[in-house]
Length: 157
Image (cartoon, rainbow, N blue to C red; front, side):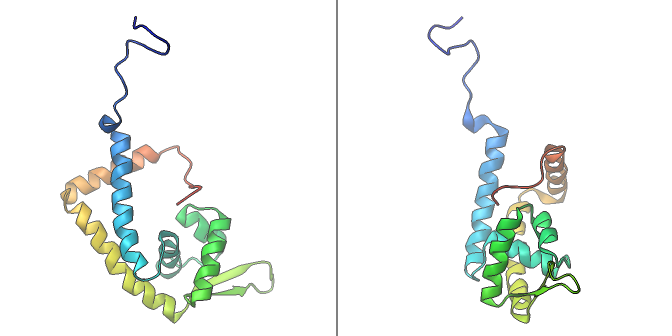
């Protein structure tokens, strides 16, 4: 048995040997690269994901958008307010129930989605070409397995 408080016979935890640490670092590197491109258009990851939810997925309800992105309603409301102020989306009260809100892309928002999409596609190509098609599919399958049974929502995105 080793001497001293808290000492054990276990080898020390090596941060850089941790696969999950490596996954986190890799994720942050690709996020930063994408965010740098999106920032040139005035977008954040959340506003980008909101454009995708509206323009590509056809979602129109704030709660559905929040669930799609994996963020809470407060973060979604904040993003929608910002996007409305920029003229990228329009929000309308539902009929006949005015408590509901419907969100849609404006023409400006559609153009922005069209401008940002090649940036996201290039970011994906940059990293995934290193793995090739088989490696990419393996990674996709492994990441899905790691998320099984875990909470989907993220408090911060």
